[in-house]
Length: 254
Image (cartoon, rainbow, N blue to C red; front, top):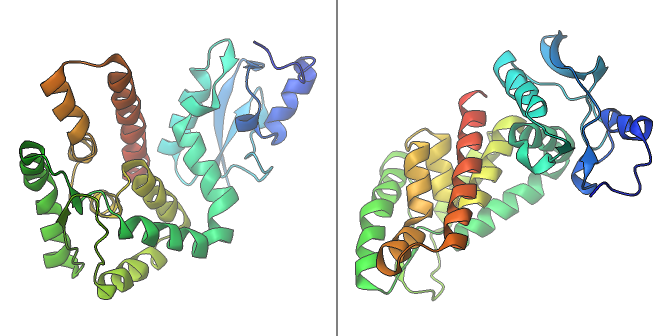
């Protein structure tokens, strides 16, 4: 259904100038041509010759041609109505411009909060699933400790376990060392997985995106093998995989 607040194509065209498209559902596609243009060493996106801006009306400056080409592709693939949630690269870039620089302290605290209850720390009490988690998760924790001095204790069940303060200090140092785009990728990787250590390993390219996806969906795969396919669960996993692969593409091209 078309949003009743958008009366005509002229009003919809204002989206190019920075209207928060993520807040307005049902926007009818109003452009025909999408292209990129090099500008001051960066790249901008043009919709019918008009420069695209972020939701907060900042210039959408893209650091390299490859990412610009992906943004062009995302806009070209829109059908009758624009679906902002389908444009992952556009979302990452807009977030990096609009939200990251002014909220680095807040983002750091969010990352450290995830670390307190990291996915890889709390193991299932079901022996068969616990074994699978140990085989897939423990090598990542071992690598983090051996290569980066970041140690995490693990436990069975959900009872809170306190982690070494030194590990949090090292994670803080790493997070503060990241560029704006890198920090954007890191926080998305952490939140998508519910795991700082998976995000950390992915950013360092220690694990592939296939391993990242497998580690996050171990429980879902276990349930599927034990009880059979669940349509809702399959859709959830497929959606996660799609977003994870786009995030990996973004990281690869920073």
